[in-house]
Length: 324
Image 1 (tube, rainbow, N blue to C red):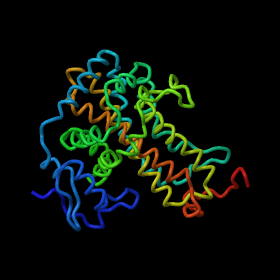
Image 2 (image 1 turned 90 degrees about the vertical axis):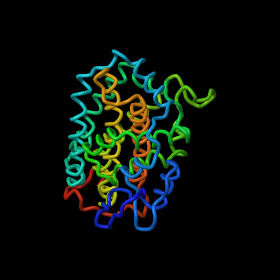
Image 3 (image 1 turned 90 degrees about the horizontal axis):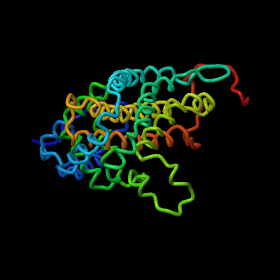
Image 4 (image 1 turned 180 degrees about the vertical axis):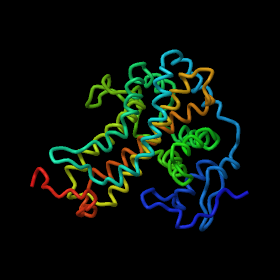
């Protein structure tokens, strides 16, 4: 059976990056399956039919090691409570986008900050129990082989795909997230595990957090900064920028959710629903998505070029800005 289905232009949402034919061919090559023909697109279900169903033994071993290392250290109740709250915030992203620029005369109202409040609680808990140190110690760097293995496990792991669907990501969005993982080995390889940062760099390595903590914390900080940034730069912000912000934010929340889901699965012990290989894939993919989309957010919303900077009517706020 071919590994694609026909998609019409009416199904394309303007604010989600399109899975172009080139990106689909790159993904297919990584997975070792046939690429799409003209007018057709890859789908997760079709990919699942084409790849080997057996999990990667190394992913099983890594997941098992992480579980053993973190056994008894995570708060299952805290994580269980946070997961539906993160899902609820994913559902609020369109509402926040429609609000446009945060209002307020002396400072911005909290639009984007509210989206990450549940994930911040998860982050602080994971930081407190040494979660990030354990994950970094048991996972390899972002090598092409590890990234390809993660992409294959994501395809195999129906629970992860179903979870993202329940979290509010449609078929095309899930494919874009998968491409963010599989098609960015060069970009991801620049994020070096702390243990592999060479001596002699111009900063104190001992103060550098683990890679997964940098990814999760960075995503949270970038989203949190949006209220202030958009409010202060209102005169430069266009609807196109706000549309890009919408997708980048939603994607990062999806990555954060995968990491929180993996942490909860560890905390649940025997009641967990993920296999060891799926656990490894969720942690790696969640980290990769937060990295790729926080970098995209920087380019989309914070590095505003002359081509991008046009007046925006998104906020409807007419009072003078602080510097006027």
